[in-house]
Length: 384
Image 1 (tube, rainbow, N blue to C red):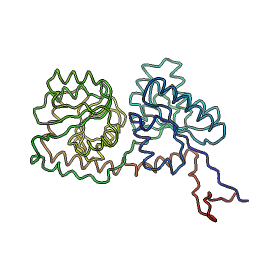
Image 2 (image 1 turned 45 degrees about the horizontal axis):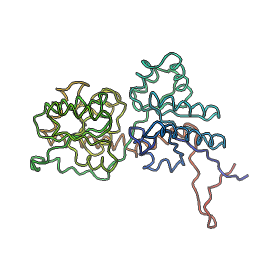
Image 3 (image 1 turned 120 degrees about the horizontal axis):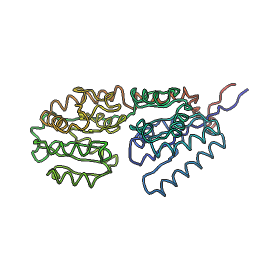
């Protein structure tokens, strides 16, 4: 008997790829590399940047869209990108909808402070509910081994799997300007770049204080939204406002333009998962100055791809920046090692097969390819 092979859609739920933050970047990278198209994944936007009304409207529209797909029996798996706080409660509604229709789900956990949120901000009922959501998942995707252990502490029954964030590799990274900056125009100092939410958690204020301690020539660009006014006021108080540019949130083209010119990337965070900004900077062959928190030590090894400084150590941060500013050859060496690590461990080319295998392990078969038959495009048929 011959019948058409059936394929139930993978529905991926997350923030808009045009929004800010790590989930948006991950979703955009999945779209750009073609894995969503290959597997016919339906991406449903559950969150957008903007007003409360815009966010509520996006969530409501997403619920109706998912409900339709569940009722019509078109959904085989939910892949849910989830952070902490509002994201957890918002995504819980979609997870409960999936349970009602007995559709399995994956939770792709992105929040670097999920454990703190769970332990410090949730009462016993909420903790019980979160454990229920985690334990019912086919898998909870953690961004690092340390993070997976933390999730198991919250919910020992949870099946965790590690899937690092991934980034595309720029086609060619030629950093001749890093070989001998001593011959550069004195009016064009080495560029230090920070990308992320401007605030205490990302160490932005520490970075500004460290910049005030530097005697070397440099230019610091801080890209991101957040507490911009406080950061600008601090830079003026410390007398370094002429060396710092607050660029606001940057689009992909603007960001890539800066990364191509950056000498040092810095992210002195207090809490992190595996920051997409660090992975992106390493893919451009840029040396990193950061802190050994969250999953960062899985990516940056002291003296190999960058320099590590304890969170809040402002003199240590200034010393690390000064060391790299004074040594173009060291910047080149660390940047090259970082680029190589991304290519071998954190590129989309390496991690896409791991994502696809996870979907296969979750019981989803790859969509049937199409073939040309008599002038018409039709799915390949299988024998049963």
